[in-house]
Structures are given as C-alpha cells and as structure tokens.
Length: 162
Image (cartoon, rainbow, N blue to C red):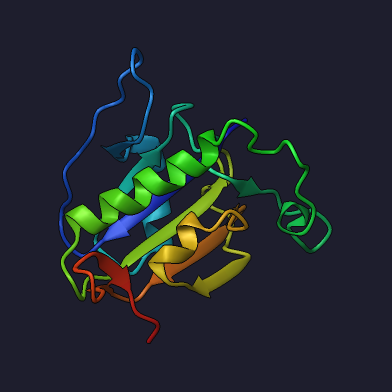
C-alpha cells in the first residue's frame, strides 16, 4: 500500500505526465476511483500530486499511529540520506509557485491509497515554504491549506501567513 498526495487549486494547473524513464514530480487528473477524495477539499480542481516513486511515497510522509505521527518526532539519521524526498518537496513547491498567482490558495490531502473515504485526522494552515523544511512530513489523513501565495521582496512567490 502506498501513500498518496492530492492537491486542489482554485483554477486548472498544467498537467505533468508520469515519465517512467525520468521519474519525477507529476501532476495528473484524478482517476475514476479517486473522485471520492474531492469531498476533502474546498477548492474545485483536484489532482494527484505524484512523486518520483509514482505514488506519494517519494514525499516525506508520516503514518498515523496511536494518536500521533511518530515520524515527525523521530527521524532516523539516514531517513533522507540521498536527499530524494527533499528534492520532491522542492519540486512541488516550485511547481506551485510557477502555476499559481499571488493570492491563490492551494490545499493538500495525504493518505494511504485505500483510505479515500476516511475523515481527515489533522487540519493545518501552513505557509508554502513549510513544505521545503526538512522537518515537514505530509501526515497520513492530514489536510493542509496554504491561504495564499504571494511575492516576497526578491520577486519569488512565497506564502504569507494570514
């Protein structure tokens, strides 16, 4: 069973097809069996945000266990030794900055692939830059909302906490 990350936006974004020869970030429309996940979002356009492992296992993710997400607290020294997961978080953040306009929100929901109908266990409002912090993990059945992407003083899109 794999971790899956879904993303919702206020308007359509560019789709990126899965490339088996060059595994990387891919953004795809939902399959018929995934449409149930749209109920977890407030934004109208929902996508599968895949990683270099095809599913969402290429992102740092934390499993819900006994009322918490232990990976957030206990991170083995070699958890991301090659930096692959960090690279995936950076690619996703870069994609969002490129695709969304200042002021646009974005939402994420991560879960194990067979749990589409289970309710969220966590709701968080975060800043976009939080995705690239090495201590950030997408939680199992965790829902995230980035209120709006803005331009920082250097001209790069950045999330402002509001």
